[in-house]
Length: 158
Image (tube, rainbow, N blue to C red; front, side):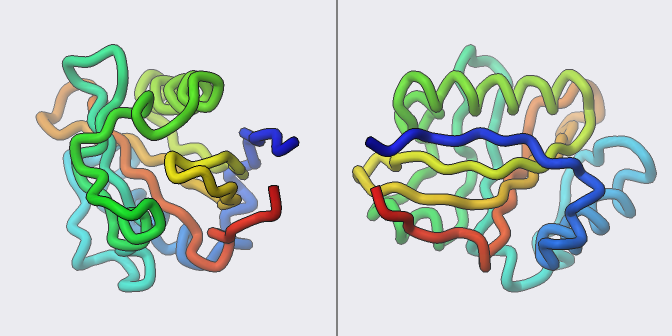
């Protein structure tokens, strides 16, 4: 039986993941030590773009995908915009993901993790994920930029 994994990684190891490292560096430069209001995708590595998601935490007890890169939509066979975390994951994984998203929002600090899960289309996947807090109105963190390392996003045997 496939068991999902949600393993936090030390952010100092981000250098092992070149695309995530570049995304984090840009986030740090734009935010000047604080979560920025937004990140312009044109300033991110082109290889990162298909593996990005913008998740909205505002006004919901769940989290909703505001924008999703083409890789995620292609893999799951549909447009993911407007999909909630509970629509995307089973209950256990949804709870883990929501806890991570809210922890990033509250701490206003990025996190790195190794994840594996069974997707909404029934296939098991593994990836390395970077979560970056954003404050779209300049106030509280209400959005999270989720970036996956392209070379580490792989289908796994169940």
